Image (cartoon, rainbow, N blue to C red; front, side):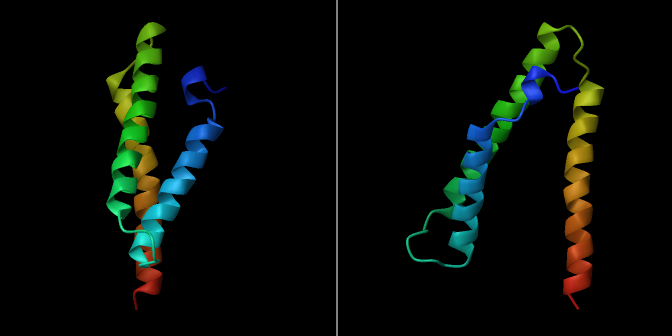
Length: 93
């Protein structure tokens, strides 16, 4: 069961989609997308907002653990990292 702080947020999901489109469009040099770095900056702010919500909710409910918090971050990042490495190994030849 998901806690309230991890509930799906359609507004933030939509914002993330726009950020990805802005950054990808910048890298493909599509006219009008000259500030792709701003999309990355905003993505970091959104991530900080979401992680702060997880920490604050955990502290309010008296069951926050730094170890489990960082374990969750590593698990999430490592999945993407391994996927990227596999894709690069397959496509990089």
